[in-house]
Length: 559
Image (cartoon, rainbow, N blue to C red):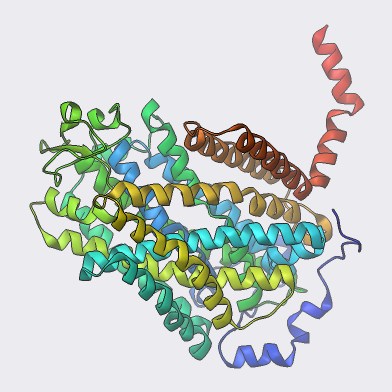
């Protein structure tokens, strides 16, 4: 795989709890690492492969899943939820459920890699792929993290403007600076305090978005029908966008790193590994269940009041019926702008995003500022919390790929400075244009989601490669054939879905010959890098399709 040294098994005695270094002991004393002892249970537990549930033990393991789940609740996801409801109604609820189910599967695999080997996915990439391929993967992952960082900064800035009326650029600066305050909680008070803070922020989001759901009061029958698989032709691109926004590449790297670095497990004890598998899976499932309910609450809130088939099939593009718009906007011509939503209220077809979502909700429920304030608080909580995990992901990725350990404040200063420049470009661009529209912010968010989609294979394919390798996972914890088939089917589906999303966004762009040639060259390099990540799997597949049994079966089938 490009490495000059053979890949060594990672189940080494040096990584067990009994050989903790003095630095590890200091991390435990300061609360940065949580020790997860094995419950006192029957001796035949490892043979029966079961774990007796204990809430007390569960709380020792709980935490990494909640930090990970914030990537499912960042401002980019919230805008995708909002627009799914506005532009497609209730019909994508089943897609949201399916995307979270696939996300849970991938996060459980990432967690398994972390607690079985004691190393993060980034560390495995550095050791397994060699320096050249590992460096390319690191650069691509850093780009994805910076793109996500821009979404979080812009989302928080929009919330600050909605709540306090400050300019968008000032909100960007405040958001870029205040993450130091949140991450100081981990440094000064330990991992558990940071995890508790994250859970509190998620509960605030629950309260805000479910309160708005109660204000709007969608029809239960419409919500239930949304879970029946069906998609109208105008909703296909939005459906693909939902899947692309939910599953983030840096989050796969983050989960394995959180578990391997913040939880101490005796990996030589089969009972400890079995217990860790159960509780880390439950932790991820509980966190993503809450994430799913929050995302669905946003989608259904906006589907109830803003979806109109007339606007969804508008010649100017997929739009929503906004009762807050008193005049036709630039997105829609006067002759076809008028619309009536599902509640019988009149409005105009227009784009609706995070920046206009609060005012649109307020108009829908009778000019109540309470709904707009709740929406803004929820978006602010999402932006602030997701910046914390984005910064942690950046730190773990850099340490894992490069083997460098740098102070978190320095890492945060660098990434925030890089993300701040393009984030500040958006308000400057808007101020130079004639007015400010939701469409401009939505366009930025769409392109950033495409960036995440392009980067996803370079987290997904290495994960499946390593969890399917017995040298890495050991024969007891390598994924079985059935699970491997399911995982690869999901991976291929996600890659195809994201390729369709990229094609739908680039199809109407006019490009010269040089740009086309450059694009083809980049695409070829993209395919080569993906093939490098799963080189052994491709060789095994080629051997399989060339096997005599396959040839014999194909020959007899023709006869």
